[in-house]
Length: 127
Image (cartoon, rainbow, N blue to C red; front, side, top):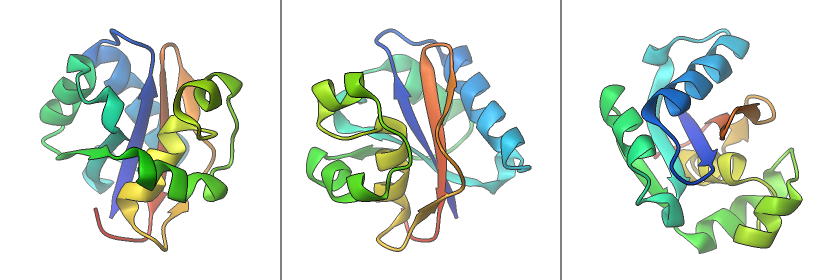
């Protein structure tokens, strides 16, 4: 199963989230059917654009608690000083995807940034 981890600025639109997911999938040569879940840090749970994107894709939205983000931090591939200041992890998208995909999860590549959204794909575990 592949999990798409999402990081974003506040007020992100559904269209922005879907565009980032599609771009990350295209980079990995995958289609939407490969996805099993959308994951985001729990603090982003109130973002309607992220929730609406998960609903549009007919996927569960996994809200990853801070402790799980931090546990996945050492496996992240990219580093954002802004995200470190806000969430104390190097990448919201990467750590959310890794945490939701399971302990043995691995990233399919570094996060992709597209406008106000970042998306990372992880595989290798359960959501």
